[in-house]
Image (cartoon, rainbow, N blue to C red; front, side, top):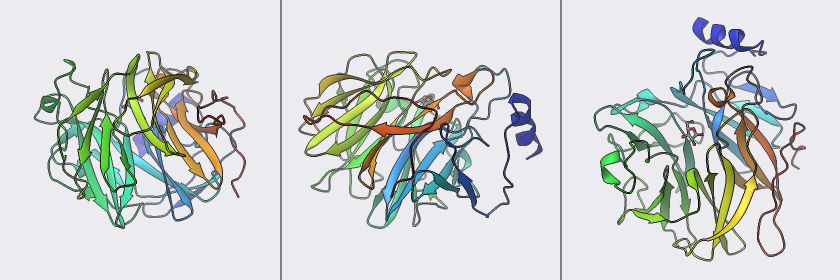
Length: 324
Ligand code: FUB
């Protein structure tokens, strides 16, 4: 804890609310970034029973360090997108997965049958490269336990890219017929069916050809359209493709979000909540130095055109108003 405090005071004088283990903390967001006492990255959001659950990575790089230092994930919830509760203790850590070495990278949680499945990318301890694990809980706020005891995806299972970090950034969706899908990737977008158990693949790993795909796929469905948004080029913008089927063909539609200030990554989540659509992403706006490794989650509105295409996001410092 002392190291934790020191890290953030060196970077800039962040206001630290008191965090007692096991006691949830209320955060009154004052715009973007929405959380300012701790660095948050790689947002994934889930709407469940009238609340938004926001799951993030946690940037802890020491000042001046040129790389990611990430060991755990954080969980927040809100009924109005402005007042957030941070659920403590942290609901998931790399140590949750005995086979993992470190690097608590991007993740996503989804509910099925009253259980919550948290898919997350980590460095594998034995199989060189990044891998994807899945943890399960009876509650959206945890505690989460490793659902398999082994990684669901390892680097030796995918051959389309030769670099060892192509198995990152999982996103999951359950289609109307109950079939679940896992999408992920870096440099190429992979996808595969999941069994009803949500912890095993149910068929071959396929690839999707998307222009300038870097990473961070996110799937959402709206009015009969499937949307596959993703980080485009590097430094990253966010672009998207649309399809009438989860299996494609995917038609590239353009940029949704421009470069995020002071961060070479942008990593988005898209949700609908209480009649509005939201674009949740990270920037380096809170960081005094290397923002790419000290990122913070922001939220702005997302607007669709009548034909289902997406308008470009306007990134704001004001953020969003209370959802009613
Ligand atoms: O946080 C580590 C990596 O940075 C994520 O996996 C990518 O999406 C990028 O945001």
